[in-house]
Amino acid sequence: MALIVQKYGGTSVGSVERIQNVARRVAQYHREGHRVVVVVSAMSGETNRLVALTQALSENPDPREVDQVIATGEQVTIGLLAIALHEIGVPAKSFTGWQVPIHTDSAHTKARILSIEREAIERELDAGKVVIVAGFQGIDVEGDVTTLGRGGSDTTAVAVAAALQADECQIYTDVDGVYTTDPRIVPEARKLDCITFEEMLEMASMGSKVLQIRSVEFAGKYKVKLRVLSSFEEGGEGTLITVEEGQSMEQPIISGIAFNRDEAKVTLLGVPDKPGVAYQILGPIAEANIDVDMIVQNVGHDGTTDFSFTVSKNDLKKALGILEEVKRALGARAVEGDRSVCKVSIVGVGMRSHPGVAAKMFKVLADEGINIQMISTSEIKISVVIDEKYLELAVRALHKAFDLDAPQE
Ligand code: ADP
Ligand code: ASP
Ligand code: MG
Image (tube, rainbow, N blue to C red; front, side, top):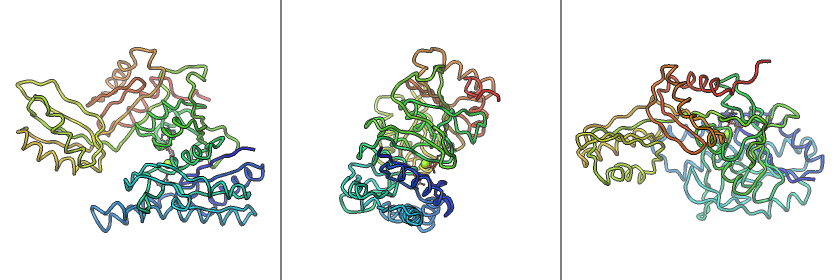
């Protein structure tokens, strides 16, 4: 008998039939005698719809009120799943984030989980029930509803698994595991039997939305056994996220390729090349709560230099507004914004022991005639910013060049 936390994403609960399908799977685990906690997302498309409603009323809606609205999607699915389970004779009880409660900080729309109270969940499990917890939401010290950022139900599931010391956390989604890259872009992508936490963290941070970054952080920190599986297929092993390296025989140099379309580039031209400039540029950006990703400062000439960085496309307008002021204060020449860029990253722990990986990546892109605008690296990752129109070409070419394509049947 095990304690299992299962999470079902939006597509997996996207219709009444799919909710019934989830109920059948949950019932099977319950019948086998396992203690089961289920975390669910809103029905697919619902969170987008709710976000759009808030934006239809205001360009800059109060984040507290946004959370009131967008947290409702998950309240619907927990209740529906409980009803579906009751219909097939399985005792079940649903909880919103505040009923558990899941305590978070007060950073509305991107709150962090601080602690989870176990009593209510454990009481219902002890009574033989399946416990259903709303993903994506919590409550702050003011008693206000908070949400955990897009894709946050993954983090709810892992945090609940950590709090309950569950034997396994299973993330059921619309693909049957973690692939070498998004199988929707590269049909030759190969499913991985396992991937290390470190690699999964880089993949998630670089844009692979199969798992929210914080869920991977949590799982690594609290040693949660984490598996990604298909909610539409029976019997698959999915992908296990592991701590150990080199479980597979092949030891590939690159384990996966991630990409992110949500990048925009900002450049300040003709900035005086003197101490304190980077701070003068990025200080006001940070104050405005804009996350900065890659940063490049060119080598100075004639006492001036160009300074570029990337932000999320949503933040571009705000960043450009701030930089107009900075430009005047610094006496810089011009500010430019470019939303037609994207980021492509290759990830793999094997990079550590193999020099020349970056050179190979750049050659592959050069052979395709793709210009690299920015580069950043970590020990197990190399990222480039390129023109968005070359995204698919770049990902496919790199996937092939690093031998990630699945063997032909
Ligand atoms: P859910 O609604 O279940 O949370 P998401 O849409 O958030 O599902 O995540 C699953 C999607 O992630 C897949 O449909 C796939 O298109 C995408 N994805 C991106 N990168 C990868 C990858 N490396 N492996 C598997 N899926 C990936
Ligand atoms: N429903 C939320 C979203 O669409 C949370 C999740 O699905 O994980 O982002
Ligand atoms: Mg998701």
